Image 1 (cartoon, rainbow, N blue to C red):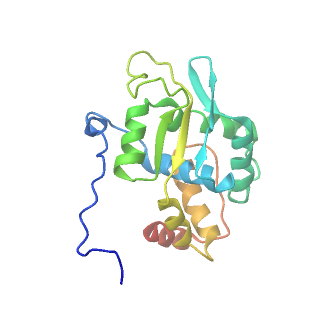
Image 2: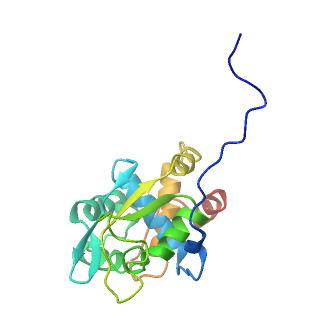
Length: 191
């Protein structure tokens, strides 16, 4: 006989701090969702990364991760795209330039794709509220990325094409794809 007692008591979880959802606007969400997922896909799909390093008062992607990202999406780039232009564009995206709280709201509360915390665990979530200094963060991905990837099994090129389109949509960097515009549009709808 089983020791389980049914019905089981409702599991109680600590709620996410609701203040994260107050006054937290995050521009160009699709572009940054695409970047977050592409970084994961291009870098061995681990659960936790420290992608960033400090550069003056900003943060940028570490060279190894940026290079892996560039190499991963090269099939979707026009042959004239230089690595330097790509790096400059990527390092100006909101994932690097926005304050931590809007990033946390977008990726933790709204889409539940990743938890974002400072590398220095002594920093409070409001550390970047005043001034324009940005600090390196740790991204801990959720299993929702596995669900996204698994929904495109056998269609990995389509998923990559959709995400590259999102990331480069407001840039001067030209993308290309072996897929038709209709196929990519269908992939966006599926996503």
